Length: 208
Image (cartoon, rainbow, N blue to C red; front, side):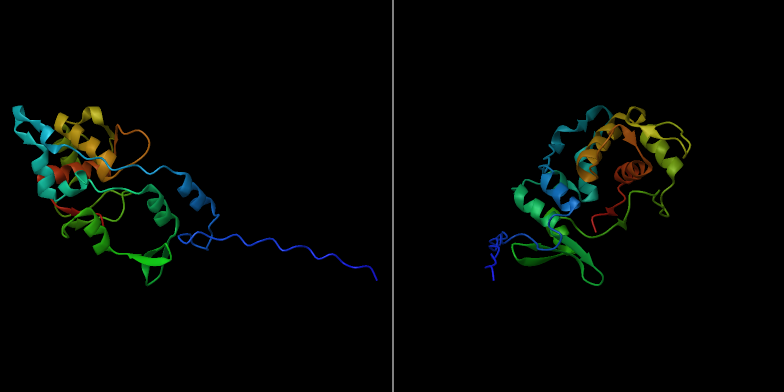
């Protein structure tokens, strides 16, 4: 009887201690690994002062409690940030968690607040896809407030229609507070809501 050759077993590849074994090659996780990590921007709020109209942007952000977000100067480790997002998962009843270097980390509201040095309080917002509705907010009135002119609620605004201080505020919103891709000169209804709240000093709690 001829002797059968046994196929040699391939050595098992060791997995780095910080990787998750679940769906490690999924398209989403591969895309996350390839994405660059943007380092936070530190804004010199003292340089944004419009003396001619007594407009101080720093005072507005102090009133909102957002100065810490705009002046974060913590060291960032891109590889760890990627692993955190890559291994993040959500389960009913347990919330959001992440496996990082074989340690399970629960992403709670308190943890996010401690990282961003934010205080709790204000109107809670959970999506940027719809027009916010609160007792003190009117979209048409807000459009007039941020442009100095009368606009209908159905009109889509652009940054060149905003007042000069609101253009600066919108630039900070689009780059840091609610960062986005695409054309940054577009002002959607959510941007109008944020601008109006900042100008009026109505606190928001949309980092929960």
